[in-house]
Length: 159
Image 1 (cartoon, helix red, strand yellow):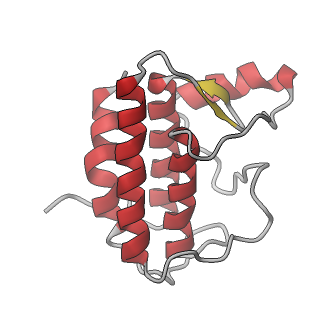
Image 2 (cartoon, rainbow, N blue to C red):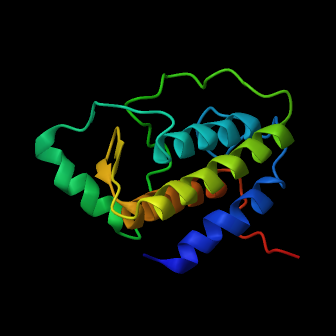
């Protein structure tokens, strides 16, 4: 387990997201700032088991390669689109981006609690398959960094 990545997800991610405007346009993609935060809420809800999937959308013959990429430090392509997402961004669910950030913080906390209570647990990701805690940390860190870069938030310092 990479403690630095876990610390980033637990302590720094929400801070950086507070620096994006709800209607901000990303350097790529179609989501605005709030849609991106709400997307991360759903990602963490999958990672903590609140959103369950039985399906792995990656063809079996490509899964090992995708998992190898997931565990690498190579970033996602800018316009990578998950096969589980619609072409257009989902409608906003929260009234404000701050509400979405607070919900994200709760989902992150729940994700950590789930694995703390059951360290051998695996939870199915629809693209990368069944992930243990260490793999989940890696994917969520990589995914968060992708969206921070999308909105120019990848070099924010906590001050």
